[in-house]
Image (cartoon, rainbow, N blue to C red):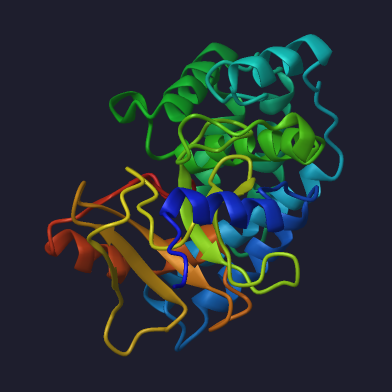
Length: 307
């Protein structure tokens, strides 16, 4: 008689055979994201209706890639890493890490690069000028609000640019870690590197991760394995359903849970090798409208959209 494995046993076996964590490679996530944003903004693509916004975000992400190549952040020392490992806490936890003023320097650099681009709207140029002149105390307050998810305290007009600065800083941190210093967390739905929520998940097709699903952190771009047909919010394995827009791309679906009524998008590289979690999630807003009408709520927001 064949042996039937429980979900926990399946996950244990899977994690022993594939990478548990996929850390970002320097500016790599930004380069791929910028290219994908421009593809999704093209006529006939899923994001064409908000193509101007996707193109603006592509300029921002290209500036992130340039800045990430030069940043040199302070990394956690042996004591901090040991504490994180002992307590199974993220080593660069977003709300607890003593971020350096370097992130604000990156923000000023990003604002200057994007404001100097030829093809951005005048309103965006004005907002970038505002960002460059804001007091450090106010920026730190906005950073705290964004990283803690306090939406009532977030200034929506400048939030994408502030978040872009924080992303650049945290990707630089995560890219310098190793898998060994990133412990598994008690809460599988949080990023094991920084403790942030995932923006979406992706089923990968590369040789090391063939057919396995990874959650993608919207802050530090770390990815971590989660068994498929499992709710990324409550880890329930029953009542999971998949939704798509009729006539839309097969590579993008919404994974919903009847237990908590939360959904996140799941992307399939086998259908489109170019999918990128942040970019494709942002470009597929019609799917969010469909899920909202069906009574589901998003598990977390997109770091490039604060409206």
